[in-house]
Image 1 (tube, one colour):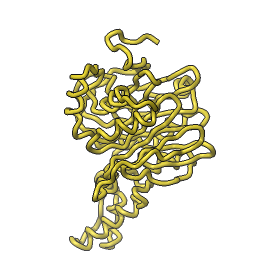
Image 2 (spheres, rainbow, N blue to C red):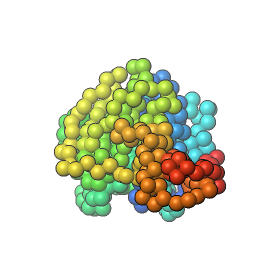
Image 3 (cartoon, rainbow, N blue to C red):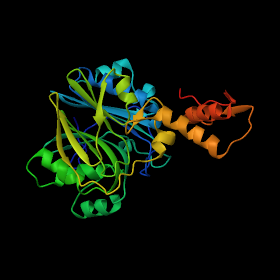
Length: 339
């Protein structure tokens, strides 16, 4: 594949298939969805289904990277998962390893490269990175890397991690990934592929969710359990705050746990708004939590109401809990649909 001449080794991006121009920027993206698939036939189809289940976490763009003996295959573009991929394009994404991402963003710079997974090639292999969260020390790291000669092709904070891996002086890829992660500050749930090996990492405070599942001999990591359910995969466990795991050849290895924060700080908006109601966050049913929120609201602020209406759809469970507590009817007043 042709490589842009201005980006010399050891860091050069691979070519992706573009489906549409995008308006993308580098502002924090709290609500993105990530997935990694290892050891499943037609990994791209599994990644597609998982991204479809995670569509509520991002509707701006979607992308999938796969890897097989012929190398990397990439497709990413603007729009919903069903707009970017079809059965014909998925058949071209060969391999038993896949990384996928759905993006939530605001209008800004016209740059397809900001759509994830971010793809690059360095001296040890092809890298694909999917990231949910934002790095608080991104600008300091970027300045240091640029001063050392790094050339960035995106305005995304996520690309910083790829440069840190490429510049690490450690001998093994595992050590390079581990070393790069120790430099990051902020919120991150990361799924990273280097050739056919999947790495998954979560920040020490566990700000964003990340779960591990298994289907047969294959494994899946994803933002929410609903991405496992759609595949018929079994939930194994949450990726712990500060944990780094490696998945290859049907095995899951815990590389290490980064120093844990004194107090875990999972984002409360996952239970309130971001997550799908049929998911479980940190072992808690999102639907049950939202119903409890509604009952608590009714207890603290009781009203006499003929009808209770949820706005938006993420409030359905809370509205049901509130309506039951005040013995009122739950009515449909408005609806938002992703098409």
